[in-house]
Length: 144
Image (cartoon, rainbow, N blue to C red; front, side, top):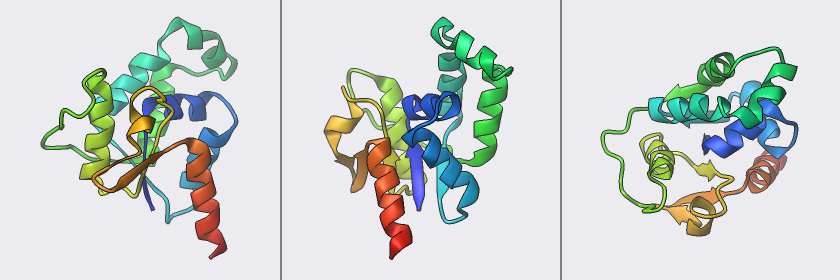
């Protein structure tokens, strides 16, 4: 299964326990789950991890935004979209999530963006769902 995580999900996965972390752990342990990202999304990740609100949490792990981004980058398959469709007028960064999913031929997009991405429901047949829903789909797939 091919999966694209939006930056909200990646930050949550790297810094807290919960469903986003379960997705990351599954990607590490299950060769049939592949994560996809782009250089632009990795740049957004490192920029987001540098927000002051995350400094204390990152400090608890005795790491840095750059190190966390490098760890995530080592888990993903990087794709380079030839074009980024303008889909979400309010937030061009979300367009890069969609472009990563289309280019990587993703089966799912797991998003934490309740304002723009999740309300779309899907794009070109690629479901846009919460981390909880993604974990549930993975669990259901393992039971079959």
